[in-house]
Image 1 (tube, rainbow, N blue to C red):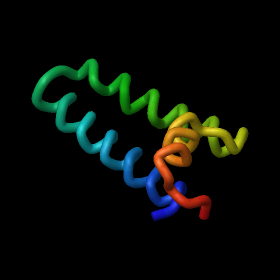
Image 2: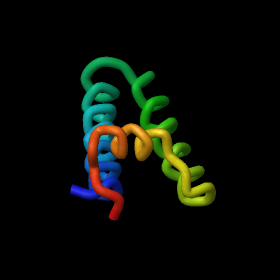
Image 3: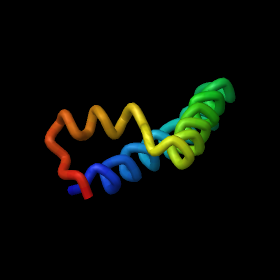
Image 4: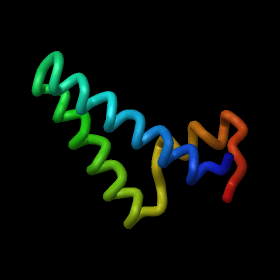
Length: 63
């Protein structure tokens, strides 16, 4: 799995978990979804994402 695929997998998983937590636990979890969205937006312009650095250190291949 490449870094890009891993990033999409993690972002999608975090979003789905946050939606479930917002629905069943507290609407405050929507802030986490907003954080994920902002991080994805800034990475589109800067080409830098903290999760990509983590995935590279975990051994994911550059794609």
